[in-house]
Image 1 (cartoon, rainbow, N blue to C red):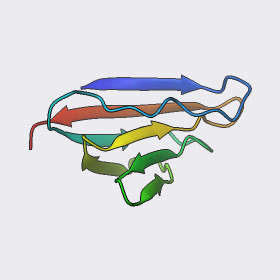
Image 2: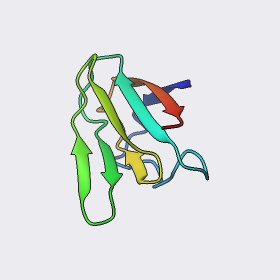
Image 3: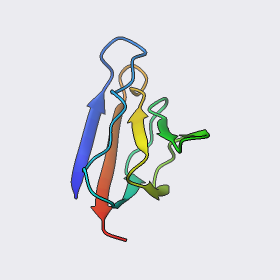
Image 4: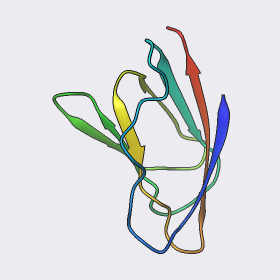
Amino acid sequence: MNFNLTYNQQSNDKSPWHVDHDFDHKVLLVYLTKFSGGETLVDAGNKIYLSEPKEDKIVTFDGTYKHCAYQPKENERRVVLNCTYLG
């Protein structure tokens, strides 16, 4: 479990596509702040899902799927609780 804090870096970049672990697991994200931008993308193989962030929203997905996130808009911060678990 960890908290991710992301600030805008003056670009529209997103984080690199990645998986959190090299073993089977699940991912649970909880958006803890209100911010614009910062969408999470999940590549489920045959389809890419986009999660619009909203404060207190929970997102869960198979941890073997690659995922990434866009930066929040300028002067905002993206705070997300990231939990991985066996399932």
